[in-house]
Amino acid sequence: MPTVSNMEEFAAAGLYPGDGDPDERRALLEWLSELGFTVEQLSTPIARDNLAAIASDYRIVPGERMSQADAAARAGLDPERFDQLATAFGFVTLDHDPPGDRRFTTDEIELFSILASLTSIFSHDEAVSVVRVIGSSFARLGEAFVSMFLVDVESPHMRAGDTELMLAHKIYDATALLDGLTARLDPVLRRHVLQAIERGRHGTVGVERLLYRNAIAFVDLVGFTPVSSDLDAPELATFLREFEGEAHDVATRCGARLVKVIGDEVMFAAPDANAACLAASTLMAGFGAGSTRVVPRAGVAFGDVLTRSGDYYGAVVNLASRLVDHAVPGEVLVTEAVTVAATDCRFDVAGRRVVKGFDDPVAVWTLRPQSASS
Image (cartoon, rainbow, N blue to C red; front, side, top):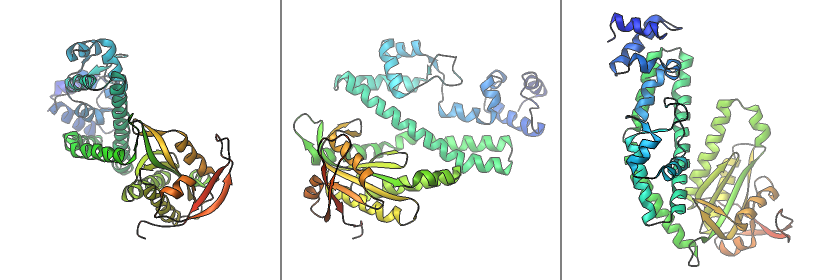
C-alpha cells in the first residue's frame, strides 16, 4: 500500500488527487502499487490518461520488451527478414514503446523464430503470405474482443457512474480470459485445417493445387443504406451482428464456408453446389422474414476458382458478385453451371442478363425456395 511519501510522489507527478473523487483515485493508485507499478510507469502521458487500463495493458502483452534490432538478433534473423515478419503480423509501435521503435517480448521473438522455419518446407513468399493471414485474422479477433468489452462492460460501467477502481478491476478480469486461451484454441485450428483439406479434396482441379471447383455465392441486403441511417449506433451494431451471425450459422449448417463480410454483403463458398444453393435459399427465408424494409438477394456461380490466403478469385467469383445486382429482393439468381451441378435443387428460367465485365449476355435461372429443414 502506498505510504504518505508515495502519495506525495503521486501528487508531484500529477496523478493525485486527479479530476474526480480523491478517495477513489487513491484507491486506484494503491491497487496499482500493489501490482508493482512505479510512479515513473504511471506518470507517462499514456498511462496518466488511462490509469484504469494500464494494468490490463501490461497483462495482455506481458514481459520485458526489447528493441527491434535486439529482437532480430535474438531470433537469429537478419533485420530485413525480421521486419518483414513483424509487418506481416501487423505489428505496429505500441503506446508504451519509444516513438517509432517497435518493441518485442521474448514470446513474440520465439514465435518469429518458429515461423521463420516454415521456409525449410515452404517458399519464403508463401510463408510470409500465411503470416499475413494469421496477422489479419488475429487483428479482427482482437477488435472483436475489444468491441465486446466496450459494449457489454465499459459502456454499462460508464452509464452507472462506477469508480475508476471498479473499471480497472473489470478490465483486468476481462483480460485474464486471454491467459492460456491461444493454447486452448489449438483444437479449433486443427479442425479448420482438416476441413480445409477436405474441401480441397472435393474441389481440386489439376495438379497445381491452385484451382478448385467451387460454388461461390454472394448475398447482400436491399434497403440497408436508408435503414442504417435511421438506426443509432447500438441498433446498427445489433443488426449487423445478427446478419453476419445468421449468415455464418446458415452457411456452416448447410456445408458451406463463410468467406468474408463486406458491409451489408456476405460471400460464402462450397465445393458442393447444392450446399451453396441451400445456404443462399435458407438465408433468404430466415433473414428476409424479419423485415419488409431490408430484404436479402443472392447470386450463385459455379466453376474453377483460384484460392489464395483463404479467399477466392477469378471469373466465377466476379460473376457471382455481379449477379447480385441483377437479382430482385428475395431472389437467388444462378448460372447454368449451377443448375447442372446442383442436382438436388430446382430452378426456373430467368432469361439472359448483360453483366458488367462479361462480353456476352449471361443465361440465368432463379433458384426455387428451399430451406435446411426441407
